[in-house]
Length: 277
View 1 (tube, helix red, strand yellow):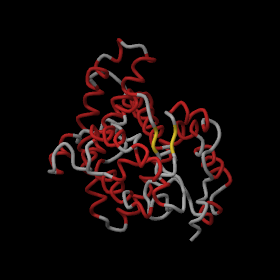
View 2 (cartoon, one colour; view 1 turned 30 degrees about the vertical axis):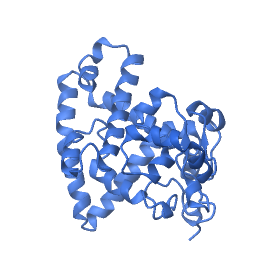
View 3 (tube, one colour; view 1 turned 90 degrees about the vertical axis):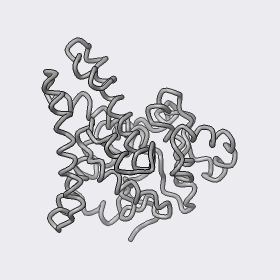
View 4 (tube, helix red, strand yellow; view 1 turned 135 degrees about the horizontal axis):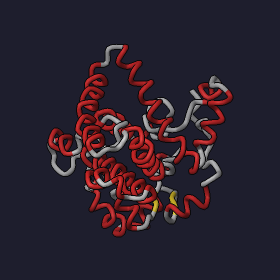
């Protein structure tokens, strides 16, 4: 589907091409998430091969794999230092930033801000972190980026052969695709002293649930990370009351409910409310 959308981009109005391409990018990112958790096979090299060409062009699979598996240490969820997917900062680190950067991070704490500035913030942050790691001699990070560049070659080649500018692709497909992922991840976790109450359940509509491969049922996924995506709804329906009790009822009645509450209003502060080291 991605190949066809890119090939026929000239025949599609931009209001159709953009959403279709973004959905392809987001869905492949969801498939990459399944691959690192051991699906569809238990052989991780086969799973990696299946998702090797990065339609997003911006996130190396092995960096996503390594940081995401570290993120699954639930006792560390939302920790500004130990959870690689935390958007919180330690209070002293936030205070050390420039006023313009602090304003940008406050904008990023609202849903609309996250959709707009979240993708470049996350990509630039990853690149800065990984460049420092490579300079320190981290071979795994270097190999992850070299393999990512190799995977980008066929993707960029197809974009160019199709007559599309790679810059236009980044603007119309990669950035909106990452924005869709930011919609999913925006409320997945919150700072809370009780670890089970840090992870959300969002009862999404079928289209978004499929696009996110049921990761909207995020608390269930964190409890059963080896369970494939298509089993999560059944598990959730069977013990819905227990799951919602365990996570303290943290969640939303769909993404419209999330937007209604937090489109323009930050869900939480940028500084972590109780981890202050």
